[in-house]
Length: 617
Ligand code: BES
Ligand code: ZN
Image (tube, rainbow, N blue to C red; front, side, top):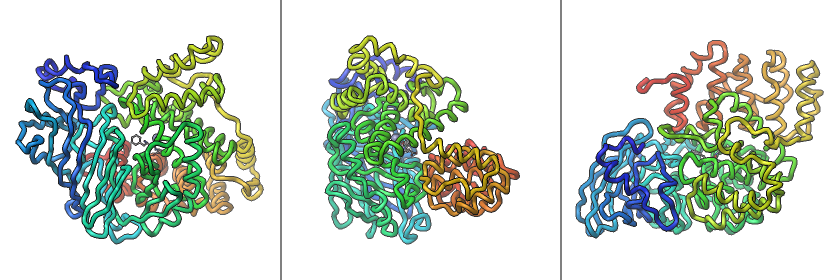
């Protein structure tokens, strides 16, 4: 993106990009997804003051940046997207000269360049967000569980925070922050902060640990909480909070497991907030308060690995952060590995093995669909939306790499290695090359015989899945695979011996029944009530099969699902299944026309491209 700057400014600013600060090598961390030049002027703290207007769907207020000025002649550049800038002043309230460049296209937004006076050390930007701010989803009361109050949540990752706060929107820039948020009476505001204080009309928040911009988050609605332990609570709308608290009964046990494995939890509280079902992701690891989809509330804790995942980010991602989006696998690959270790610790080896096997199955499928260049852990995302890197490569290939290291070096050395990685880099943003240096020094160089067993370069820069990738054997899955074969061979549904199957086994089963006949689908549905399933993973897997194979008895359930759930991971395969069904394109477009406005911008972007939806349609 830097090359989009006018040539003159490149000449002026470019030479200074490399100025190193104490902890960060800014040359190495060249982030192509920001206009900010933190090597020259960096924001280290921000004070946010916002008023939420649910009628207009805008937030109005200010952010004050506290600056570190390495190059005294350089301006302060922040990212913005669809923001109206109202005024820019210094610590004395004096107006500063600023320029908001034209939109740079697609995901880039508009750089706001602010000239600094000789002694300027704080910059206050007054602004208003757009009702279409990509990071903010404003929900109507009808889209909530209670149906009475509207709801707002923000989603910053990867580069959407710039649409609700003008700031240096790069994961390499860490800030501490305070916030003061005013919301209508009867609404509760929460943020990803380690401290909060409620006043009459506003709530104050404080984050004393330096975090990257994508981890600043807010939600506001009719919310209440239930304690799980001294430091853990579950937040949700009143109608689902008890169900949510029961489901997350093991929350404190998960935190203890992770501390046991990887060192102390350093963020004070660990709460989980359940959002309305339009939330585009399964979960988002906002510090101190994970944001989660209510679709994991299956009633039997069978989908809680998602919480283990978001919790694990408190180490891999939030404590040690990817410095640029091409290093995203450092966040997600590590986190999937940690998630699997937490699951094993709390729920046992069987469960963990099944979940790993399902992950590897998903990865192998995605490998058949992705271009080779995108099968690389250290992916090149220059001039691309960082969202393009959110594939099973970063997640499951990343985790497989760590599992392979564990296999070669043994669990004991692996755990020590990971604990040191987190402890020695706490609150830093790091690149792949820093990790590779650390790996080399702490593991590879320590044992030349073992080093021969793994080709690190191939894992990080090669495409495909290295042949030494560990793929676990699961006895429980062997039983399922036998049942799939029996069913396809004519054994009746009732005789398959499914009584003690858990969710993961059902998912494996459904992945095996690819092209069932109408009779087979009707028999499965009758025996196992799949169309009525209250487990969103099982239901969505079933609906995809049913839809693709024109099983009309599932149509109404599919419509309802697509009208209420906005989680992209479910929407994509379901719309894909529709496109493959008879008359499916017409149906897909008809449903999408009604449902689109209920989806978050992130899901809309993906589905617009998939369905050929043009703006304004
Ligand atoms: N940090 C991600 C979500 C994310 C990634 C949002 C990139 C925007 C850009 C989160 O931790 C995540 O990975 N969520 C997964 C669930 C997980 C169990 C794999 C999801 O939402 O599906
Ligand atoms: Zn994640």
